[in-house]
Amino acid sequence: MDLTKLSPDRRAVFERIAEKEKAGLFHESVENDPPTKPLLPDDVDYLCKKLSSKIKRRAANFIGDHYFLDLIKKNVLVIDGAEGIEYLEAVKNGAIVTCNHFSAFDNYIVFHCIRKYLPRKYLYKIIREGNYTAFPGLYGFLFRHCNTLPLSSNRRTMINFMSAVNELLKRGETVLVYPEQEMWWNYRKPRPYKVGGFKLAYRANVPVVPMFISMKHDESRMDENGYPVQRHTLHILPPIYPDTTLGEKDGAEKMMNEAYALCKAKYEEVYGEPLVYGAGEPSVTEEEK
Image (cartoon, rainbow, N blue to C red; front, side, top):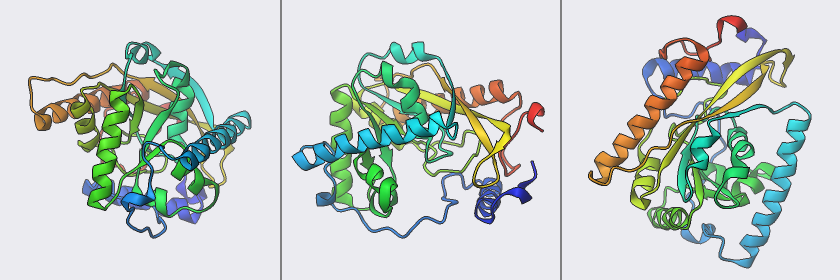
């Protein structure tokens, strides 16, 4: 597609994606995120034990749900459906779910498609430290209170984080991890994974349910950036269970490699092309060229 029609900000993002993809720097940020500060242990109530945290969580879920449902109603966020629900239904207790990270809305695409099948009420989302500490306004409120589990550059906070995630998984909750780490806007390819989320699954002895969101241009409509509105389909893939005969390092890496292989295969099936890095911009199907 003609990238000259994009807003300058998004065109610059695509240029940075091209540079980092070519260099193999798949886990680096391409956005101009606001400056952040370290998240200290007292700054976050991971398990929502305080009454004030419970009230804010309820408000954030109510506001966030209505906000995104309104975007769906207005066809700003387009979700064509999900396939593979049976794989999630087979998981009766806690699980890590993963998906490709290409939009600030992709976590809601996952939640919207699977909410009826969650063993518990909520989908918890692991997010970057800066999203929790740096964003003002509505998005900042949702980042802090809508069942989010922020990472931290502070060691003591990370100890609390890991303990909380383990407890949530042990009690049967579902936790969303972005194994690609950073968001690459409208990037269609699955990127190589980081192992951290798979270690969390291995420690808690819960499965990982890989998910892949595919996109298709709606050429009849452009978004506010001059890019075609995307139509999304969620592909839920077979769950991967920890191999308890292995240690944490090898076991987590095995789960990671299997999850990536499933998403790679789904990408190639959906888009009808081999997964090759280096083109530097979102791939399109022949129909969309």
